[in-house]
Length: 193
Figure 1: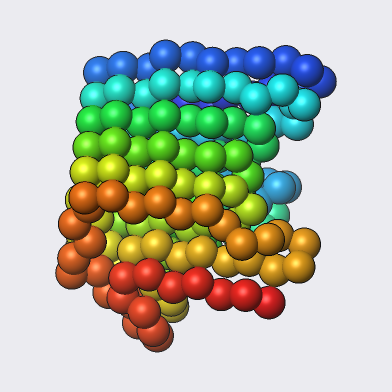
Figure 2: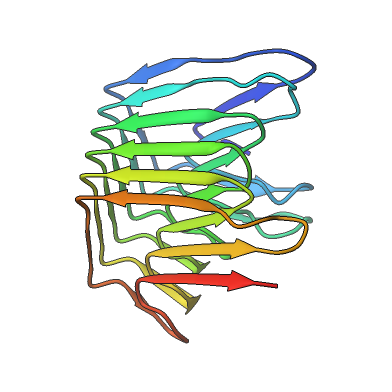
């Protein structure tokens, strides 16, 4: 995972980097074992403590996660899984791709807070922009537009089951427009199994 930047934790370790005014682009993450990619930026770990990374005024663009002997990569631009509370402000997440879930961002655990961010032109099979499973996301003053899912939900896909309870999604003052999906739900879709 993390073709551009990878942050990991273990035990009771904490990693709370500050990343600002960076461009993370044209990276490739070839998944070999766990399915978590985050081709541009990945937060991954098994720590019992929560980490608080801050990402400000960054461009995460034209990254791709793919398959290399394991399950398809998740999160073309960003992947968050484990005890992370990542905060993004003023970031652009554009033109990222995954053959699996979350073209722009996959949140498999932990949380992502996005303020004044744009998600444009990302592509995934489920959730062209965001895919949420067993985590939470907050979106404030964001633009989510022109994202595409080759199966379900061009914008935000939220999945829950008995083992992964209902996800927390907060959306305030955002524009969600012109997202498309080949099968159903161009904008938002929630599924319970």
